[in-house]
Length: 432
Image (cartoon, rainbow, N blue to C red; front, side):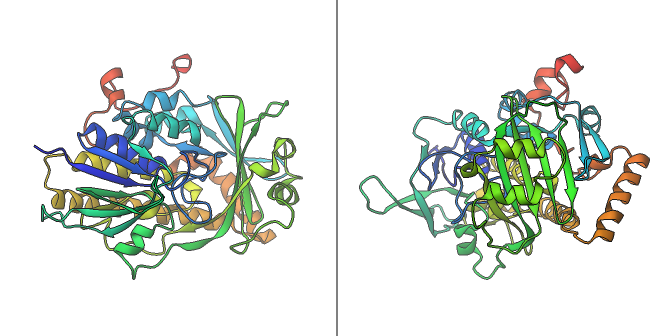
């Protein structure tokens, strides 16, 4: 039989996961990335201006147990878990330092089968790209969909046009399957569903930065203040991934630089926030407005094209599931679209499995995101009381938000299940 071909538009984490998964299923895969290299910087849901897959490096990504199990099917889950900096606990705080609640990685393992791993996006992208055949990834290749094709007609493949070919001329490729992982402002989505509402501004913007660890000890935390929050998470290489959000009008930029803007907003908050900002390179602070899906799309596919990740279900970062759901999409799509499968039926099944789940996560993340935008003193005081009280009565408060999400398991036995005799990742050996 002729080997089936797939084109993946977008070289971010979702696109590369799809490429690796399809390659392992026997597809001949080409990844088209418009940027000059695979250097991710925007966390899922925050593309840099102009959209696209890869962006300049400088951000982390959280991978909950559901995403780790999906990556286990590609035999890369253990390598991802090795990127984690182990911390037994994390905290939810107020700007002055008062602790409202505590999170426990051991409790996450008991509840979901594994802890949340926070990795540097560049390392994860490099890990995935290394699993692809040489020459499978083409950079400086801005792709647009010319024809979605017809999965019921062998003589009508999907057609993709590439701008930025080596000789400067346009190039056209055909494929049995196109996977659109081209980000929140997906041009492919607009082509497939021209009347569908564009993602809408979620009411807050986000900053992300990676800096050296402070000299004084600290505990991983997320701190909630009026109209925004700050998070600090260690990386395995000794650096720190920090993120912040604030309820501001869309499209804003600091008059001087974004580090100065963060200092004005968060510079008086508890340790280690001032120390991290003091160590930050102003040029390396990423700022992007946060968007969320305005409505569920008619489908996650049309013709021979499957939409994936932010291209079809952008979400706020408040559950840490943007990248995780893209990884799930990729693994499910590859499992359904076996080389000998009927493609039309496979893509219909992909929509049926992924649309309800991901849109539920979109709505749940958005509800939490709205809580972070509360600004008035009475509202923030009420929020703090509710969080502290609930944490006392239900210590797993922060984890319960992920019920039905982080406990997801991919189709088939995972590598971790075969290797360890369990269906889930375990604690590091020193904590077993």
